Length: 422
Ligand code: UD1
Image (cartoon, rainbow, N blue to C red; front, side, top):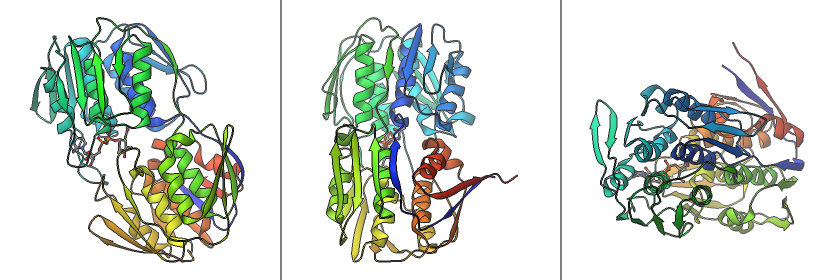
């Protein structure tokens, strides 16, 4: 299996362009199932998760393919199957996002229940609560969700969960409500920019969604939606990862094409550490200057600090002198990267959902193993500053969510290569 080899110690310099957001592209692809005809989506990143969604589409009898480097065409004129099988869903939990659109368009959907994953248990109870709120019948059988209901009816649904709002459940409910009879009000809706992007896409299709970006979203059902052409927002997690890479290596980077207003919590935390971040037109510039100091952060639903940047931020804090505390409030068990970072010389201890990062460490290269998508990015960042050689295995996780990361880092001056191994 391929692995990545990094020789640490290079300062990153130059400019990097951010790709489209995976977590906006996946729901927007799913929403294209709501309309017959040809949908065209621009700025779609070339990632394994996008391929997995396309494989689900092929299973549904829907044509979907890239027609140039980042433009995807989806033709959902006919749908011949209403199910997402276990073999595909287990590869990507976001497969469950076809539930709402299939139910709305076909009156039925059968989707395998995704299992837990390395970042902890990931239930879908809120997704099902949302659909039941619209009068769908939902049954669990043989590991599948069977949802039926050809006459969905708008309702008021409270979607808050134990860990706050749910991005996926909010998205599934909005998609199911778009063509339901009457008005749906979602209370405790997720406010993530990817939810807003989906709503903009749906409104262009003829839906009537308002309040997106706030915890109260209203969806007035319409009879029909039509296919459209749309451009996805830039990936805030990829942008944040490069901002951290620039800061960590003591370099000076310019990030092109990202939305700084989607990165407020990260920018605030990095400025708290003493990193200089400046917006200049289309660019966000990052530079490490002077003394760095520790910060305490808690991951939270948007606009709080994103859990998807927790592992990468931990790498920065492990070299900042002093003690920082990171509390993981979205996925309390999402710390699989900690023992691997400690192998590289970090000094991080865990107490429940809190990580105590004793900073000021000099990292030294070693073989490490990626456990999930964002953990793999964190290990690569650590490799960039570790003295000597770091090898990161199980890099297929990286292929799920970072477009051409090795090429992008190489262009910034990193000594990094991907090695094919059997
Ligand atoms: C999305 C992102 C993922 C990110 C996560 C949190 C996509 C494709 N993925 O995942 O990268 O890490 O948001 O920002 O957009 N929960 C329940 N019941 C449910 C659903 C969720 O209890 O029915 C819990 C989860 O276990 C978790 C929290 O709610 O603790 C937030 O999860 P959620 O926002 O749903 O994450 P995803 O949409 O799966």
